[in-house]
Length: 458
Image (cartoon, rainbow, N blue to C red; front, side):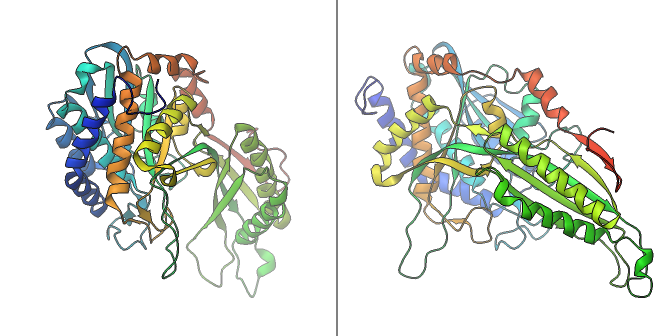
């Protein structure tokens, strides 16, 4: 394959796809902005899913709806049999009630840029169908808008017929990725708002090659209520147990592996100021670049939680729910995207990093198939903040769609030799059934009294 994406047998097709996406720029911005203005939380993205379905159906593609409640999938078949490449977009917003564009009823806001992903998916689908590109491709392109990437609560999703908290996890469980060979997507990255007259925008396109996974803990500390002033010795303060546990976690931070992040949330409990707290809950995400570093941090966190209960004579119930697996971006897919991005945006428009401490359920998918998880700019404000928003529609909506479309062409053009090689070179860590069993095994529960030993034995 030529070093120049526009010097080869697919050059004309790539140029025509880029031109088609440029012509669609206003439409793609309208799609992205409309979704931004109507954010929906995980597994409740009904309006957003309906918009995606209408867009894809309007291209004459067969559309499936209601996959894991809100997932939408369409297929474009090539001229010859071959691998299946999936273009992914995530539908959900996150709970960010302080965001100026937050839904007043749910607190949902697109403070992470998933609205841009839908614009990419629509842009790639429109370009490939308009230019009759399928006649020059071997295999299929699946356009898949998926629910529930944001992870805001520990535990079951709390919606009917859904088992796993991550949308891609649930879709894997249901077999909706069966037959897919590779998956492509691009995720927004914001930057801190610059000071007046200073600051640099995020590069147009980029790549972080590794992302953390995470495990979860919920610790319910149980004490004994009593009058906080006249009879404190008759009570056991669950809040004090939680505070001691959090101090114990802080005391071990320098012993965690360099790639580990542990961030707890102390959940508010109802009660009176003059009553010793009988119950206090702490939720924790334990992130790491590898499964081994996550497991080591879990042991340290568990010891700290038990120590907090032991210190004040409380009990603690520990439970865990499925988290996300670490993501290693496939080098072949990432290399193709980088090559295309450098042509589209130039060296100054490209940023590459070895590691991101963020997590995504695309990591779970990467344990079954090659996954590309690129990044794009065009946004200001750091991700998940009240200041995050799209400020450059071309960088946020248009350029990523071009780079993804070109990568699809690289994979499936001719006899799809590049896609076949990427699939052959990938070593899956799970079968689908093995993956589902492994995720289910992470849901555990144990009760530890103040003199209990190791958890997870009950």
